Length: 172
Image 1 (cartoon, rainbow, N blue to C red):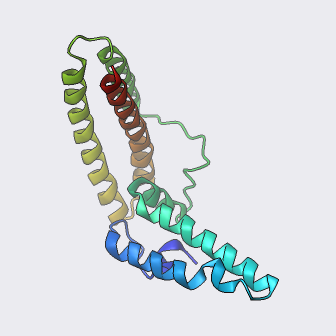
Image 2: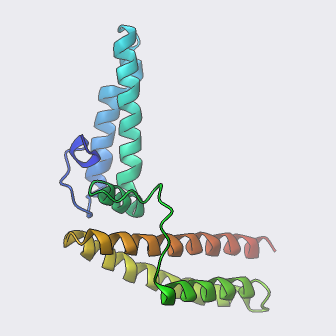
């Protein structure tokens, strides 16, 4: 059973977050291992496995990028274990330039302002690519969506580096 069906949701990218959370709580209560403490060993193990599946499913569907990766896995694209490299040279060059720019920001006298400006541009890129991915998933353009997810991974990692630098600048 796929994760969407487990939660009684249609298989599509846009998910109602509050409905997902309430279904998660219902399933957690229903399959919580403590409810099976007095049951035979086999039932306890099944409940434990089901609880783990429910937790994994919730984590996959809760996070937009993981949800997209999961949807793609349902169509034969295993992005979590792949060693596929992007062939979009322009995008890769842009990523190198962005990383160099981020590294240079740390040493600037106006680092906080420069980082805020950089973070704003990065956020705009994330929004644009996320919209592109949503459209590709809705159109079932799986190969294009997989490429966009790969690009979003780069941007997501860059976003994490921005957050780390923000913390470093605050600690100064």
